[in-house]
Length: 244
Image (spheres, rainbow, N blue to C red):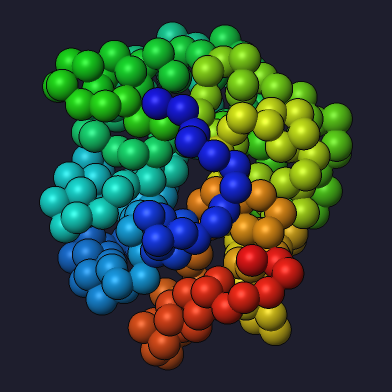
């Protein structure tokens, strides 16, 4: 499966909630599901990261899919191609919508992951997950342009459907791989704390720069009122303006 567009527009056919992935960075599946259900009106995608997967394993993917979410499995696979390929095949059988691999592993490793996801999905009669290549972690304060562009091109050559990058890196990454779905973590409303994310942007800025999917975590999940925080983010994307 490949990315449909790099343009992050909300349309009647694609409402704002389909542009947003909720990062469930928790170590308890019941707690994660309860929070996800509360925020379902604003998020169509639930992201299972390393912490939740380490706690609940495949059950996290199955449970959230059963709750009606598209599941973004963010494990950043990075190993020799054979290992990544076999692991991706196992993950592909779970039916996630997205799975991340780290682009620093190179073309052969990324291609093995793409193939593994397709084989795993085929094993159980599902559509293959979109492989997302992580360029540089958003916690890194510096992202060398040549590294970003090279990893984006590697992802495209390997058959990945998308790339994960910080909002300030979008133009460079999309110039190098223009057909890819661009996924941006670390988005925050203006004035919010950056936490451990070094390169951040508002959701509207990221969509305006070409993001196709935004990952939102702590600004919502650690808010005193997660529903209000989620509604504020959606409202910021629905307002007309030059960056939307």
